[in-house]
Image (cartoon, rainbow, N blue to C red; front, side):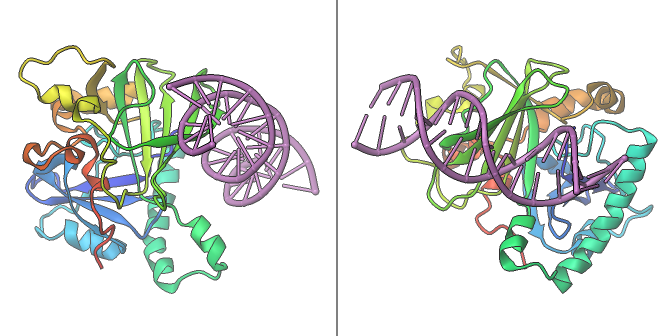
Length: 276
DNA sequence: CGCTTTTGACCCGCGC
DNA sequence: GCGCGGGTCAAAAGCG
């Protein structure tokens, strides 16, 4: 039901080493994070699994990096269920990831158009406790579709960034397990500045920064967490859950740098999507 | 009038 | 091949 796109790795014995998030959608791409810096600030992007793993191994720690995809230490994570079939799915997916970097090098034989279509953009998903579905993130979105979600009474809405030539998309749906939670999935990265008409006061988490916040017109509680099975999440979370809720916001706060960084997962502020 | 939203149709990938 | 589900298109309607 929930197709999370990243598998996260970290070294369990060395919390200072970097962590990589590998995209399942695009096996050639990954994001790299400082472990201590959470997922708020990717420190690099890449297009090769070997390179990603090389980065993640840069602290040369043992034992080898382990998947932390189902821990709450990430807003970006793997799927909600952890049954055996799912596990084997993940194993085969990991295999695909490994194969993927190879196939990316080789390139496939699809015609360009199909190739384009097949290539998925980097995705970033998170949950937010909110009364409204569409969170103000500073960008302008146009709705282009809505679909009923299987096994959920809540529809999924599809939005596209209205900026010309920007192909960033956004999916918004309400969790049927917890209807107060809104699941937002961004796909792609903005390569343009925020629309200048956007007022800081309109933007979603800005009230969080004020010393004495007036009640926002639209109330969003900044409570992001791993999408997926909440019980699983909480079980895995243990004492870390609070830290996750507080620190693992996908929104980055850079007070002296204006609007955008307040609002948008930093992954989307990267103007050059991948390092070569 | 221009932009956005709605919504049914269509396309595509995947599993059986 | 067929059915299903997810994602997108595009015409019509709505709105300021």
